[in-house]
Length: 305
Image (cartoon, rainbow, N blue to C red; front, side, top):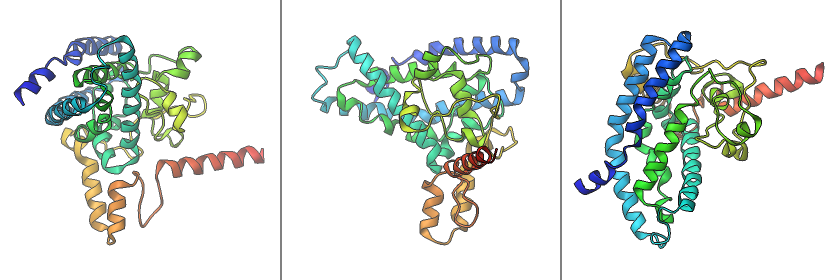
C-alpha cells in the first residue's frame, strides 16, 4: 500500500494550482467585493478541507484498483503517454465527469454528498472550492472503466486534475458570454451560472466538466437567459446557516427523516435513490417535473397572446 501511496503522491497538479486559485480569488474580490461574504467564503474553504480529508482513503483505494485493472487491460502496452492517448483520455475523463455530476443531481443519496457545493447563494471563485464532501466516497466508480482501456492511474488522475482546474474558472459572474463557437463546445461561466441557479428553468442542467457538448447531446442543456430569468444562486430551499457540519450533512439528515416517516419499503428506497423532490405523500417537486410544468405554462401564455 505504501508503494501505491508513493506513486499517487506524484499527482501534485492541484497543489501547484492552489496558489493560483487564491490569487484569482483575491483579484475577483478586489474587482467585485459585493460578490463575496466573509462567513460564506469561510464555509467554502472548510468544505475544501473536509472534502480533501474524506477523499484520501477512497482516492488511494481507487488508485490501487485502477492499477490492477490497468494490468488486466490488453491495451496497456499500446496506450502509453502519446499525444493521441492524452486526447482520448480527455474525452473519456470528461464524459465520466458528466455522468458522475449528472447523477449527483438525479440520485438523492448522491445529491446529499454533492449539495454543499450548491449551498452558497453567491457565485464566485470561492464557491468553486466549496466541494461536496460525501461525493468523494462514490466519485471514482464513474472512472472505473477507463484503466481497462489501457490508461494508467497516474495519467488518469492528472487528467482529472486538469478538469478540476478548468472548472474553477467557470465559477464567476465577471465573465459574460464568450464567442458563440466557444459557448457551443465548452463549459463557460455563462453555462455554469445556469448550473448553480435555483430557478426552475435551470434546475439540473449543464453538468459539464470542460465540454458542454455532453449536455447538448443528452438533453440537459439550458441557455442562460439573463433578461428573462436571471440566475438566482443557492438551493430551492436555502439552509441559511454557516455551520460547516450542517452544510456538509443536512441532506443526509433530511433523507433519514423521510425514510423514517415512510411506511412502505418501496417509498423508503425512493427517498434514497429517486431524484431530490420526490415524495410519497405530497407534491412531486423533482426538477424535471417542475420544469415541465413551467414550460407548459409558458406555452399556454404564448398561445393565448
